[in-house]
Length: 177
Image (tube, rainbow, N blue to C red; front, top):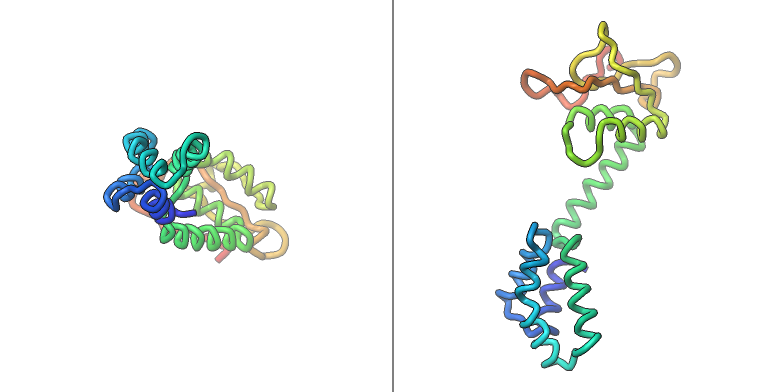
């Protein structure tokens, strides 16, 4: 179910106007979404009663609307989100070292810490080395390791500092290029 379908349901079952349904859509995902939805509660219940939906059935429907507001999004967003998930998964599967280096360079992301990202990469076969005072730069890079020269055997090296000057390219491959 998407936000647009919830809007249609609010108009069909809850007798909401298009403006009220749009207010419901805008409430979803906002910081005060539940409060905004609560402001429509009486209108929704009146509309549901007009359509013979009363008591526990009306309460259940309203609770589901509130629950959906915490995670629902527009159908158009689902398509772009799906593409990002697919592309990210493909890169992580085929180029795990480059994937890690890119994520480390994008810090702070606010979702996963560098420690969580590197632990996951290690579980997926990426050799992650600690910063080396004599060899490490500011950003995560890919370097060759002993053994076959394929991407799965490369590693990301990172420091906890951010780049003091400008935006670096997404991934430096160093001598592994």
